[in-house]
Image (cartoon, rainbow over all chains, first blue to last red):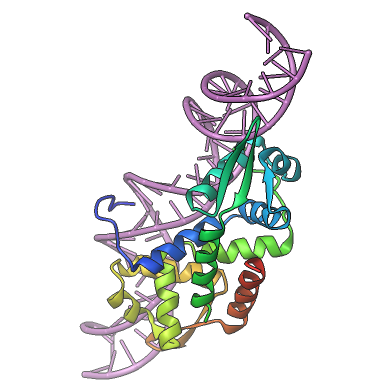
Length: 101
Length: 101
DNA sequence: AAAACTCATCGTATATTTGCGATAAGCAAT
DNA sequence: ATTGCTTATCGCAAATATACGATGAGTTTT
């Protein structure tokens, strides 16, 4: 980008929807969320077993989903249990529903 | 990416949903689609007037939405009339609905 | 204390995305 | 034919995203 200063601004809902959509914009992350929907929760290792990518890459995708607010991690030493963040999930759901009429 | 060969494969629905989500993953493109939903159709110039970015950038975003199948362009010389592609829109809608339960 | 296990982070390489101005392409009107 | 209008494409620069192996941090078990 040439214009690094001055962010382009949009309405709050537009930004929020785009942010959620962006987080969903990779098949690995869709696969992770689908898995979490079934299992309701799971550990990172479970995902590494299921997905055709390395552990570090899985971890990175989890981080992005966490940043977007779609999932949350809970410490269950020595593992970490990931679940869908229901509050934000419902917000995302509502935004997409509204968007598609 | 280090592994440029051999694409990682996911289920068809997962790939399709991710592709649509990726296309929606930018506020400008959300804004464009929202505008098209209201107006049902519009010209590129209308969007350039409304959006805070240059004409060439608007054109690029339109191209991406077209590649994703979410919109289609119709020649109305000397302008181009863009509309939502209802068929694919409905497919996307169904995929998101199903995804969010 | 040491070894083992689980997961995140770092460093790196490459690909893709985003944005702009400039230019080209297509058509309409003069 | 030339001009003007509308939109796409090109060429570039900078930012982000994607992926990996290696390493680190934190626990648990031995």
